Image (cartoon, rainbow, N blue to C red; front, side, top):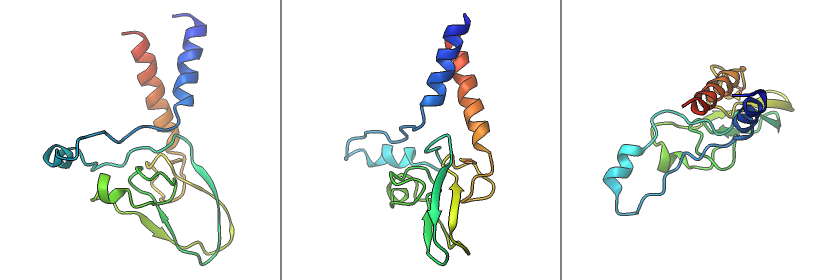
Length: 132
Ligand code: FES
């Protein structure tokens, strides 16, 4: 592997911001579908979302990663991951915050830098794929 192809692999890994966690299943396959429901959050993105929040306003942070309105809940957990509920929070002051989108933070809903582990893991996976 030369340097150019390694750079291309790294660029591709970094540009794949959104994962496609949902599977297209026929409506009649309810047994199969119940087996495939998420019990672990899926990363919605590899970087946090910068969001303006207002003091005293109520927000629901998506904890499952299936919401289409990241980083906020759109109710997708009811269908995709019923055991993972959104985290409701109320900021104490107005401002801009970084809300976790990789869903690996230990300080939910705020980013704690855990997304670097996700990026590194995906990068290693991509590089390993090149050497198969
Ligand atoms: S985006 Fe999840 S810890 Fe930063």
